[in-house]
Length: 401
Image 1 (cartoon, one colour):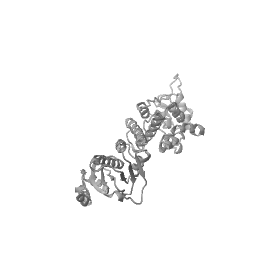
Image 2 (cartoon, one colour; image 1 turned 90 degrees about the horizontal axis):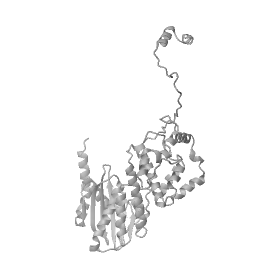
Image 3 (cartoon, helix red, strand yellow; image 1 turned 120 degrees about the vertical axis):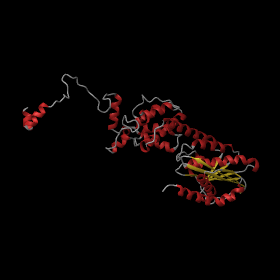
Image 4 (tube, rainbow, N blue to C red; image 1 turned 135 degrees about the vertical axis):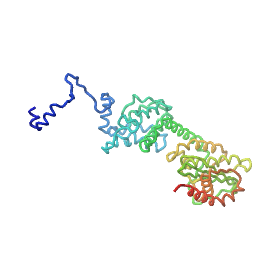
């Protein structure tokens, strides 16, 4: 009371004394220790390790020789995935915990599960979404007992695995990271089955290329002149796409310099690369139907899609923008492998494929399709640009202001 009277006015002292305040600490209650770094308040060895891991950058203490011993397993992977895996073991990925170290206001919490801080091991192995991916994969991994150190965890997962299983593991890590970014940045729903499907398609694509391409396909670089060879077939293909997901693909087939077939189709696709793939696949499929009538000769395919050309030549998947197109890429490669003659695919500039380009645009905007002889092509070629203009202006007039 003496202290209250010394600090407060008499009327305030009366109010304080008469206030009904429940005691915060109950007499005789047992003291309880809690671990503030976990939501449950319980301490476990894992929780302690996670806390220590968040205070120090454990990657910097890893000997370089140990990093190289892990990297030695990646010989058969494409370069982009190798770079990604090196960033994983070097602690260079911008997971939430690493971002928090650099920007204090950045939340270290995992944005997918909202349960734990997102360090590398949590992102790839302990987040519930990631666990479901590993369980559904060909490896059937149970990640509950993996080390919290990302390097040790990777070594545990790859120890005793063959080359194919290491590829499955590596591509799964890569797709997990891309899916994580799509969830955090684009707010896309995390779909474990989509990830396992992507990994399966990439492996099929890589295997198909390894079997079919070395003796079947010759690719030339971009040339300043694009002269047709005497004899044989020349095929021009192109795709068209817009953000409404409408797409078109077209091809023009020449035999010994004479136009013998044109074709264009409309599609509903998610990206322009897929349109390029379908355009070339349709062209080669049509060519197979013409062999009996026109005979077999050397085959030249002209495309302005550099990514598709590199994909066919080297199995280079680094810049492939669409996993959805991979099933059609596999079918395209199967068609190529069935030709008994050499297929020469050349990357060219847009003006070289202007015929197919105009037809692809026409197919996309008009939703029309045609595959047949070119006796009607003169009219199509003459009216293509006029039709495109009419369709475009009609769409503009129909759209509300």
